[in-house]
Length: 247
Image 1 (cartoon, helix red, strand yellow):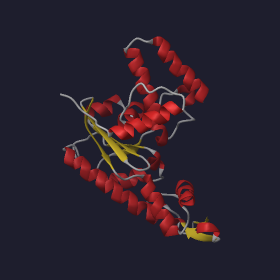
Image 2: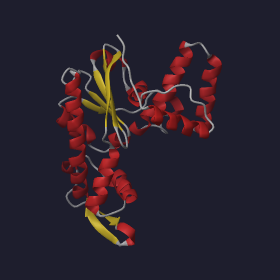
Image 3: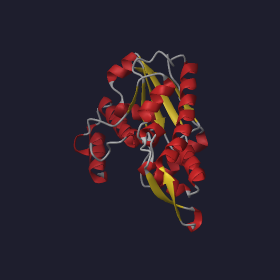
Image 4: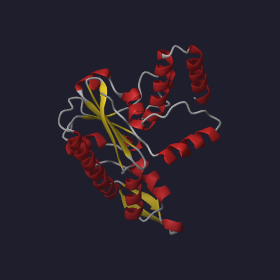
């Protein structure tokens, strides 16, 4: 009959306060996976049954759709920061360098990396450079990703939709940009997997053509759809002006 999403009041108040200090006005709070779904999910997927997993920095938010509507949602306390921390420890480098290495050289599976690929990594606190095998990096990333995806699969099964999603799983968020993640996720989840990229954006397509932009683009799409439904064209026009200024 209804689906309720709750959040801690102090967390919401801090978020609202931050937005207001940036000179903006908060009209509504939207569950991040729900927003991402606005940008990347197809109507056919929602009808058949699909799970959207937004792999963020500190958490993984999930929204499950069946028969065109949101049927279940949950948040897991794991995300890309855990992968970055493992890399920093394993490669003996700083968190900032670990994040850069993950983005530039990271793969979700060691099987997809050339045997002889190596690259330099700076040590902690200026201790000099050392060379690292891309396979070693991929091993670190793959181990943590498989752990995260196994947790996701277990949580999906608890909802009762784990093996009954013909549309499979759509991954968004920064972690979803990891090369080869579709293959690893399909193996762990036992479902079809694709990476969700915002579409139908006209001239903005190249600027936001990545899974990390799904929530941001989805928020704008959600707001525009609500504005159209409420027949308030002036405010929709403000969204268009804001987009032009931003990009």
